Image (tube, rainbow over all chains, first blue to last red; front, side):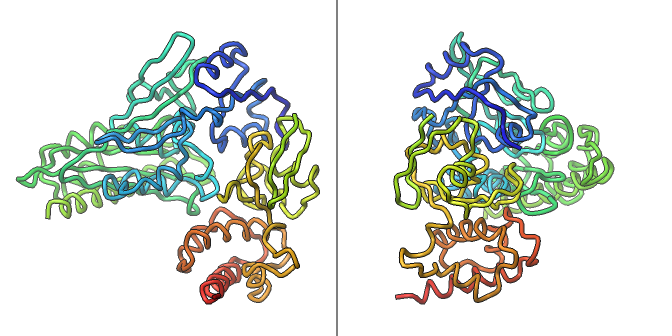
Length: 292
Length: 157
C-alpha cells in the first residue's frame, strides 16, 4: 500500500528539529533511516501527520570510537558502524550483531539510533546497548538529558523517550583487556528477524576466572534482556563447560517468548538457550585467545 | 514539492507529494519502469536502486529524501550504445532470470557487491543477495550469473 499523506519537514539543526516536533505535537514522527517506520506507514499502521527528517542535520551524522566508547550520532547507518576500522577486533559482538541486521540495502539506510528508539524486542541494537552499559542522549524542549540503557526500554516498541524528544546520540562502552565476545542468532533466512539471538562478552582474569561477563538475548520477551542470572553465575567462576551450561540454563526464569508462525514459545525457549550457549562459548574461547 | 535528482547522470525534476516513494517517482513521474515495485514494504528487494553508489530499497525512501542525490537505476547499467553491462550479459548467458520481475533488484544489489568485492565467494554472493526474492529460478542460476560476471569483470583489461 501507499503511505498516507503527511507534512514533510527537513530541519538543518537539532534545535530546529526539536522545535518542529514540539510545534506539530504527538501526530508528528521523527524519521532517520526509515527502515522500520516506512513499512509501518505503507501498511498504515503508522499515519503520522508530519515527519521530521533528521537526515539533513549534519551534526547527527557521526560514527567513531573515542578511546573505549563507541559514539554514534542519530543518523549513523548500520553500514557506517561496519566500516569503522578495527571494530571487529575491538568488540566482535558489535560487528557480528550489525552484520546480522537485515540486508545490505537495509544496513545502508537504517540507523542504530532509529533501531533503539523503535525498540523492537527482536532487534540487535537495543541488546548491544544493554550489554555494553550504553546510554543515549535525548533532546527535547526542556533541554538535553542522558538515559541509561537499563532505564530506556519499557515494553514492546516503547521507550522512556517522550513524544517530543529526539534521540541524538548513542554511546556504548567497549571493554578493554583480555576480552572475547560474540553475537549469535537463529533466523529463518539470513537477515530476517531472529527466532532468538544472544550476545555474550567475557573478560578473563590472570588466574583464568571470569572477571566480567555479559549476556543479552533478543526475541524472547517484550524487550531485549540482559541476563542478571547468567552473569552472576559466570562472574568469578572458572568458565568450564558445566559452568557455561549452568549460566545459560539460568536464563529460563528471565525470558518469556511468544508463540508465532515461526515457532512455539517452548521452541523459542530452547533456541534461546542454545544460541546463548553458543555465544558464551565463543566469547570464552575468544577471551582465552586474547590472553594467549 | 519539487524534487530534483540526478538519475543515471541526468538531472531530473518531478513535482510530488512527500508521501510518494522514490520507486513511484522513478516509475510514474520519470518513466523509468525498470525499477519494479513488489512488496512495497522492504522485503522483496525488487525496487533496489543505488543512492550515491549504495544499494537502497526505493520503496522505503521518500523521493523528497533523495533530493539532490545521485540515483542509479537498472536503466543506468548498460552503456549508452546499448551494450549490456557484464552483469546483464552474465544473467542472460547463465539463465539468471525467468519472468524477470525480480531481475532489476538483483542486478543493482549485485552491482554494489562487485563494486566492493570483485572476487566474492559463492557463499558471499548468496549472503549478499539474501534480501532479494525470486519466485522462479531457485536462485542457483542467479548466483552462477553473478560469479560469471565477477570472473569476466576481473578478466577485463
